[in-house]
Every structure is written in C-alpha cells, then in structure tokens.
Length: 243
Image (tube, one colour):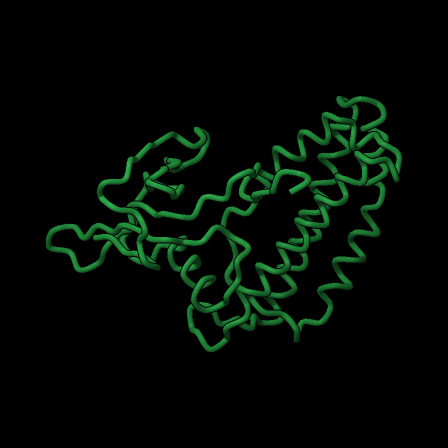
C-alpha cells in the first residue's frame, strides 16, 4: 500500500530511469528520474512491523515542526502480511537535492588539501571552520525542531531523574577522555604537522572536561528528546561550494 504526502506530478506515460545510489549503506538507495522529477527511493532491506522512524520523523518535520533542513519525505510503501494487523514500511521516497556531497567527503577533501596543517587565516583553514560551523548550526536547528512540540506525545521532551543526568554527564566525560586517548595513540602514525595539532587538542582534555561539567550542571534544564539514531558526517548533505 502506497502513501503520498502531496499531489503526485508524474504520469503513467513519463519515462522512468533508475540508477543505484551508493553501495555502502544498510539499505538500497535508488536515484529515480520520472518525467521532470528526480527522487531518492530507499528500499529497506530489514523491515520491522510498526512505526518506521524515517517516516514518522520525516512527516513530523514537514507537518508539525516545519523544518526544511532535510530532504522532504514524499511518500512511502508499506506491506501488511496476510493475517496480520500491523504493517511494515518497505520503501520510502524523498526529494532529491542535486549538487550535494556528504560532509564526510567534503571533510576528507579539505584535509587532503592541507586544511589541518594550514595556518589560521589561510583559505583552506577557513573553509574547514566554515564547514564545522555549518554542521553545528544545522545540528542545533534539527534538535530544536525535534523538541519543539511538547503537545505531541511521541515527540514530547521527557524529564530524566537526577541520577540519570549524572550518569549521562559522567558518560560524556569518559567518552571525551577515550577519544583524546585514541588521538594521542594515533598521532605518532600521522604526518608531523598534523600530529602536532592533534596533540595540542588532546592536551586540552582538562579544559574540555570542565566545559562538559559546566554545560551539564543545571540538571533542572535537562530533557530527553528524539534524536537521529545514526547521526554522523556521512548522513549530512553539503551543497557544492559556491552554491
């Protein structure tokens, strides 16, 4: 059974072209050109009965939060097994955003151009900082959107206990130290100029710990909200530079 979030513009007479989009994901993504439109169709290789987060949150961003920082959900297909009452989403359709790469690929390109070794104020160094700033801004906007509807039970922020807050805070500190320890261990295998910068970052561990403790000190302001369960640089789209 198919669902559409808007009014379809394609017709049965439109020519359809399908191409594989990437090969390293847990699902199969296809770039589908149908008539004048281009879409990303994701076929879910692991289907589970019940609410599908991609559909639930995609619809929330469009209908309830009005946040356009992610490709719009245009529709989805679900399957109801014979004799069962609960369906499973088997495919989704999103708008295609042309002229984009992932933030991970952009970061790798900047590092290859010497962004980490560049002096502050150099063009490559500035482009790296611009990328980091943009990622921080869009990440903050996404989480504000996810926390913006306390009137909707599936998205209402939840107040954790003080003990839970302390456990999360301690986990953040431990994770930060683990990352910095890994940086120190791997620095010797990297070019000297990069290693020097990474060791300088690792040496700021105490500063980072104090910042984490300060930012998480007000337990009364804590709230658990919906989040992206697989949020990393490969999931972020970045427009081509200059656009």
